[in-house]
Length: 321
Figure 1 (tube, rainbow, N blue to C red):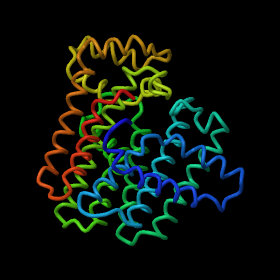
Figure 2: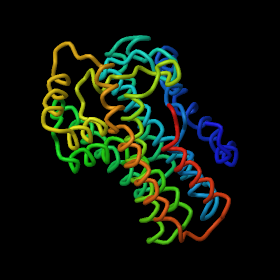
Figure 3: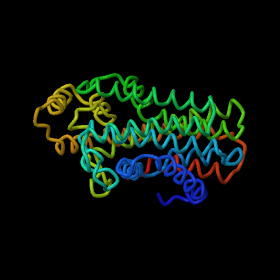
Figure 4: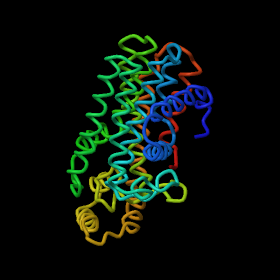
């Protein structure tokens, strides 16, 4: 991402990546190759970026921040590897997914290794508070993913259930990032709480935009396999909003299409766009970001770092991949 925010934390990102590399040096060369390849697919370093910038609003980046950021990125990467296996995805960040480069067995075990290494990082460089927060985030992430798997084909689920799913599978790690960024820089209890909620709402918006991009995106630009949500019959925001607002005849036609054995993804995509469901989903994501920004409006601290956090939050709803 060509954002000014990232220029403010270049050294911190570099230090985190160096720590990540040191953490995997003791494994065998073949396993190291797999893990290092896996780390390439994590991409934007969004979670470490928000952690470091939040830290700099209230103080300086410390070893606890670095270990927390590296651990969170390990967990995030593990979830991407496992997601790609579940979705049958072929591309991620313009690279073959781990399950394509090797196979699904390697992918599962590589993800598991990264999860174990994340706990090792926290045990070495954080403290009990950080371990508890990351453990909680991992629990919520796994529960959200499992809830999503068991909701396949349930396109008429309540919006509250959809928000619960994405609040776990996507928002929990972002909430952990901003919470630990504030906490380890000595922010007061209320600010730690607000930045946790800020991260949560930013994560909700991020997943909503991911839902939209799976419909409207192009594989060449996104660098990953698209339409997998439709192919795998996952209830996503554009589909839920379409079914909520469509006339009964249109609803039944859409449900029939979504449940068809030979799903015509491009036909459904056109209907979602033409109906205004995609635009409505975009507005829901923007609402989450505005609410997130309102939470931290009264945060005192380094103004440039706070502006950088806000820049990243706003980028979440305008990104095209």
